[in-house]
Image (tube, rainbow, N blue to C red; front, side, top):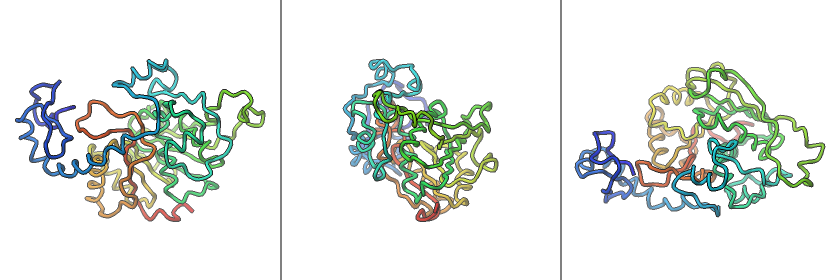
Length: 341
């Protein structure tokens, strides 16, 4: 664990934090001196962190039978996936999945439901890669999206996703027939890609040669998911982009970066649903506090454990709570019912 007061002054020992707060039991310190210095700040959240810790076990519960290790590299290397294909950033083992013949009969609400529908074995680590498109799918299902209408999504702050755009083609399987356009907006977008558009025309097929996905009629799939790239902060470039029906900001760190303030101020005027995720519940709590300081009571979808959070936890964090990409989600905006109809 990192020292909870590491930002105040140099730690006694950068490699060891043997002292844990007796109140919350989730924040550690390198020395009693640092613990004492940090108390004026930590006492404001100590009880809240203790409450989060008491319900933390559910965050680490997944149906999968694969075992994660102390490093993602070791986990992938053991499976012969390290540095290969999309796994260069995390990875994909969808090659053995059976292509779904029909859309889900009802909105999927858990990884277990998704794996059963996609005919994936629970030892497949596909969820490590697919958490972003499935979280996007989950967010869309919280609105009254009509699959017969075109849906434009503004996806704020992408980083790793820019190297894994192919995974968003899974929306073709999840929402067949829907016309979806995603605008990726953020400083990490390469300058050379600014304003560019591409189409995601297919999703991974199964290995069974006799499967329906190999039929001649399915060789060419009409593209229904397209993506565009926009470099810059959202409040600076949004005027260049077509109007959004939904805005998402995944693993946003709203409370950690001051540049979010003008973007949040803009979003509060747009009257579209906005969904924000972060690595733990506390990060979402702090984000909501920041938003409430600008416009109180604007959060309409309360902080919720995301059923499609990434199962791979984060290592070497500064707080002893389960940490997962897209771990918790909340939404803000005008009333969601009927908004997109």
